[in-house]
View: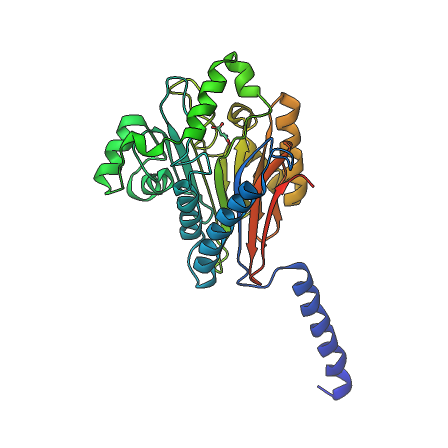
Length: 333
Ligand code: ASP
């Protein structure tokens, strides 16, 4: 090849490679997004101390997950670690600090999904498992099942060596008072009450290997009927992850998330309609609202693009990106 022949070829090659890198994220990108629930969270009903406490809790969880991803750990490990921290923090409605059912108990739901294999695990209505997200992962990895509930799930937790606590461990005065307030209203109104702060926690992550994972954990909704199961442990409603599309974790009025199959719908809109994660996120939250529900979600696509739409006053949310930047937001604006 003469110089005259190879020079244009080289230029073309350079141009082609710069186009690719402009469209696709660099290989080994890693991102983490978390939420701590959506609801009536406004500057007016927040004190500076509360704001600082929520921000610090979200930041610690993000840092923990980021360190896992940065050191080459899996998105599943990051999701579980982030959610465990938030479950242990009584600020959130998951694990310690969970809201109370109508009969004054705490019944916890959680789920996790692996975007690489589409394996999933979920637990519903457990009362003695300190970290339901860890039990959900054990259901996924150590049983042939996807979902286990109540006493059977607790028995499985014991057999898997997962920490069991006394039911009193979950109780906080704040959640107890929330139940007392809700009991004074008629139950549907209490559930629809715009002053209800939901407080569920969730995490979605993309690791260096390009694997997505999603997880969600909750005490459900204050004054829920005992035995009620929300969307959080329902794969496709509150949680979904698929390496071909997106990882999603929702928070909000669970019945509407189940009826709209929110998390899977978001993935399907990307897969079948080619919507971006932001467009798909907006679309599904609008559908929740159109049906009369409220809430939000976090979603992270396979290239590391994120969306955090909600139709409530606020949503505790945050992200950590490969460059080490941590962003935390609470309010709508
Ligand atoms: N989605 C949860 C449920 O309905 C509640 C929440 O997200 O706060 O159980």
